[in-house]
Image (cartoon, rainbow, N blue to C red):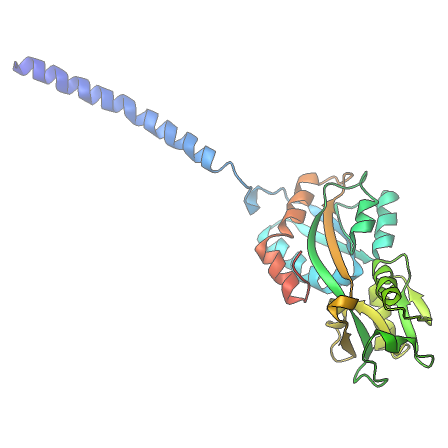
Length: 267
């Protein structure tokens, strides 16, 4: 082979290699974009001022969850408005400005299908009997609540915890005449804490927030009711993408760990 031919082939190889380098770089960039096209990172979620309507029983745990979410998503602020689920539903129907909703039952959420996105259950809960510290009235089970000398307070029937309470009492054929019917579970707990009632039916997680003021008497699983907490975005939200990101986050391991630590059960 002549030296001239060898030199020409070498030069052609150099030119070909030079042309292939930028093509490889382009392919690498495209591949990178393709790989990054999955779930959005925290930095991709739009910054927003979110308002979340949430059931009263989530008051303490959502304060921690909100702080964790804001830390993970700089620039986003989460404001919670807590009330009984039935009150929250009324606010949604009246057009209250908010971005997401979390209720303490699926029935309330199901009644808002035209107003909310697809709900996801993020946690579950159970009832306990809350009594004064030290259980001075020696209450051991649901049937004890029928005692005529006991002052028992329940949530109103329209409130999820009130509906669950009626369900478990009726199933055990226990006739309770409450001294008052409260608008949410925290109001029931407060009555027992202040000594205005001897006992009340509340969620386990609510009783756990006041261990130095009330005792929690467990109700056997066979006599109890399971409360489910669905979360959904509101269709009227002006921060739809950010609201959806928050609702989705509530099912992540980090959020679920916060809920478990507060005593909520797995969805």
